[in-house]
Length: 475
Image (cartoon, rainbow, N blue to C red; front, side, top):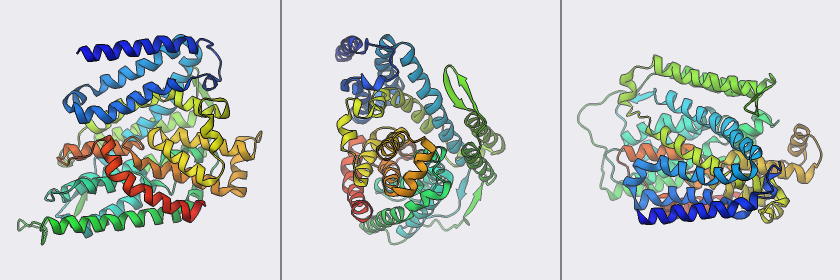
């Protein structure tokens, strides 16, 4: 308790020291004036996610919401004190324009996919597991990484309940289904959807197909080798058989109609322009609001028309989406200074990063590295704007996007691949990562800590894959 008080006092001293630096207040170019240490609450939020589940799991399980709120308050108060209306606008903007649409999309996909139950005798052999991961990867670009991951993770875990070594299975599932598989369409991952809204043609992202095929092929081959090794190590000659075999079938198939409704709502918001309205000073496109309403409706219809038994048999709970919603509001709020500094370009404290971005390989690695720790959607937009500013300064955004695709497509490919692929590097790189981890732990599958995931899996496995992608496509 004394240590906690010391930490609180230290944080408030930090807040007091921060306020005078912000005291120029009211300038809309807030990122140009924020000091680099204003990102400390964001660092604190990330370290809390990384350390507390490891050293104080019971505390974290019961109080992660309070931790998220704590770090949010730590940054919100000094921002409001110093920048007043400007800070309030930035806070409201990230909540209304970014966080709420983000959690509505995730929540609708989570709810609808949780109403689809794959039943039957499905035993987790290396071949069966590899086929399931491959199917999930193919689905991810069309129903979103969240939809594909939530559809298959529970059947995948049930099929492997008899296996002792399951952690690596879930990690590879995160790599492929929850991330890289979503790289082919704007429906797959939020950064690509934002590009679609800013003029990138819907099917242009199919140019990432060669990148995706190489990355996924390497990972799936590696997965099969690992799975075969552990399968033989466990001495499993054949899957356990209790004498009864149930044919494989799907229940709750009406939810595929609701998934189609989600896909249609997302497409609609990118194809029509119905004007804007102001919500608490934040401009929102009317078609985006309509999309969010339709997404909520799809989730509600799924709850109404899906039997409760199906969700119970699917081991469906609300905890994973609740955890994502609570932790990501803290992440979104605390990352405001970091994003604004990046968006200030060469006028901000992170100018050395922006200045270092010159070639496609730089865009791939810097966009990717930041996407692994920041929300990949605004990171994508930041470096898309950087590329357009480098080549077409002063040109209207829509025209600049067209010119970038026509004259310098490799830069947009690097930005897109970095934002999507690198999301697999950490639990917070993409929201489905968190949900898959939570569902796996609920099912009794031990998952590595935040740093354990990186040190044991993502760095030694994914980074070499991305180096291969770099040499083939971006050098």
